[in-house]
Image (cartoon, rainbow, N blue to C red; front, side):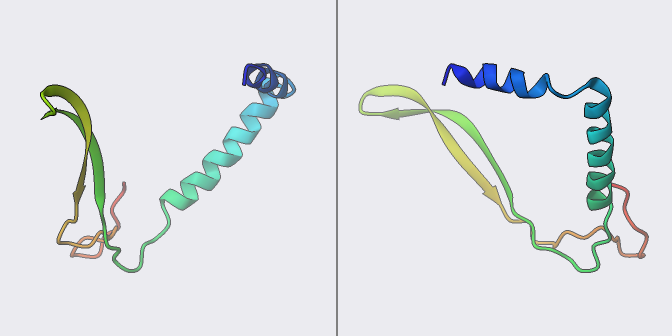
Length: 88
């Protein structure tokens, strides 16, 4: 486990700043195309979050993670009612 940071530092030092920049630019283009792709149909959506709450049990109070899940009634789409694409 202690060798992992040294290994990563060795691997990362083999890339020049310009090579790293070029890789990031290509990745930005690919992710941009994915993020702005048209959604022709609606998709069901589930929102999940978690938070810590104080709970009492066995005579003690402690923090415990609580999972929160919401299912919106509407379906998610990138097209509002009038058909104009939404810029997320």
